[in-house]
Length: 166
Image (cartoon, rainbow, N blue to C red):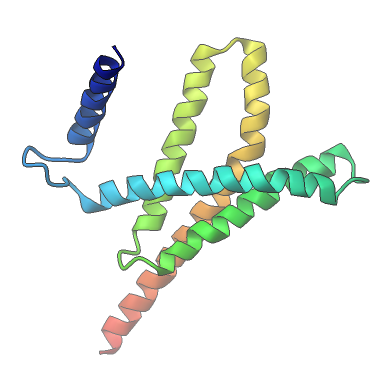
């Protein structure tokens, strides 16, 4: 029974990859599309680990602070740390579009989560979800997305300037 369930899951997963990323010959439809998707999953992991590890550290570092100050620090600092790590990868890849496009994927994930939770939960549960969503998601998306777009814009301007100088 477990192998039947496992094989059905494997077939669905293969179908997902084939429809979204691969052509009929098994080659990627778009390398940027595929690589940025995989990079966005890595970024999601960085953000999850950042919040998972840093929230307790911040809580212990600010024992006398008010709840509002601790909540703001726990919302902003892990998001900024993960954004720094993710945006540093901009300088690693030769295709400079990967990091900004990965942030577009992260935005799509956030919107899908928001819409899905709106349909699956009651009004009270959704308001609790919105509280945590607002604490954890926007800081990373905005800081990382804006930083990566600014880095990309700077890179393109420098590239154009170098081409016109030659």
